[in-house]
Length: 38
Length: 538
Image 1 (cartoon, chains in turn yellow, purple):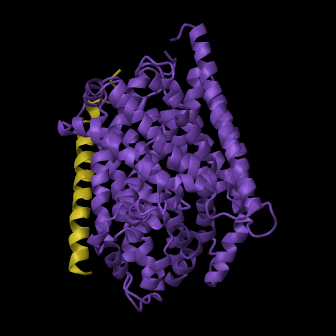
Image 2 (image 1 turned 135 degrees about the vertical axis):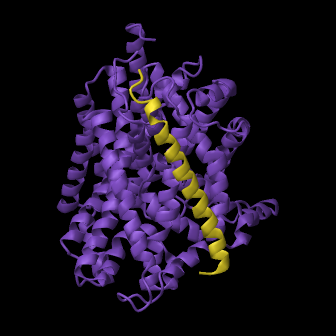
Image 3 (image 1 turned 180 degrees about the vertical axis):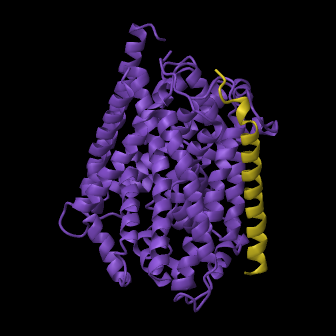
């Protein structure tokens, strides 16, 4: 792959994977504070 | 207050259900096509900007409207908007949240049924030995197109009714036992299938399994930036449109799912998590399957006329055959299987708001509302199936699946952020939040998000031919007028580029039908509020 393509793809993938994992882990960690409440 | 006590059983289930609602066929078919046509890797810049200032904020708005409405016993948009202000007219903006879901479900379930059929065909190895024109012919005969005025195909109808049956079965089981359980099974499978196909696609080298080019060349083509495209308004409009449609905002389905939350449940983190899961599937998986495979077998030249949709049903089945008997069946099964999973997790999300409206307003049982929804979808789907060749399908997609979404998103953002008020809205979004949203988003929400949606709306209304905005503006000031693109709202409305009188007749009749559906929903809302008033439920 060309350098310019890699320079676009890798940061984009990194940002999306980081936020996807970060938010999901945070949501799962706090899951029990919401489950079962009424 | 509604008598419903339905709730999500787990936070993971809710996030997967909302992500499943957003992840649809467009993630795999529309995104790569848009990126190629709009600057390659540079497309991602306006795409991410649109995501940050319009997509994610709009998700927060819709989640917050939904949870707020749910606390007042409303699980569909008419009631949710009604409680945001004093005007009695607000609830009528909520027509879109019922109308759009009903109409889109009708034609969407039809496409969904194709993916189910092709999953079965792939496992049965029916494409073995077929060349490109035979696969195209197979698709056309499957749809019953090309022969006579009516496009009648018993096989396509069979799979359509099976698909409708599956949707209704999930919906009839309720929020937790139906939608949530289905999402918990189907979403992980979808991601697994996507990862398998992406790895398979990206490891294809020239000379291997009949490939003529390294698949990575496709990825290179997709991501090579053409920065000059960033000064073109068409690219920004396309990026904002893609973000808009991929997140399934402006439909009323996110509101409905959020209405089953408790008062202090988080919406800020849930919305962000579901939104980014959709982005993972779209940008990473969606960009790594179709284009690399197409380039590997058809070469880079094939991308000049790339259409994700045609590629999916009329080319990929033949290309998978290069992988040998076992892998080709597996390739077809995972590809069409993941499209089917993406489809059904979206279509069930369209059913729930319609059913919730019937349950809240007319005290229908879940079973009864499921049957009414199913019947309405079948009746509305028939014109798109039987008159597919004549433009009925495209009319549904344009007016309900595209135009209505933008109108509703613009209306709801103004109602929530300006009429309900930014301070109330900000408090609503942040109540029970498990993340701290930076305060700058308060101003983005108030000013930038509605402006962005407004620009998408105006842009789509008057898009000039070929998206040549700068040339068109200078032409306008030089007295040359404004040439509308046939795909613009006004261009579509006035049949620009269509000469066939038979097609125009079908299009006009289809519009009449859609207007009737819209008016019927409006009348039902009027009657529902009369009943509420009589029963002192307001």
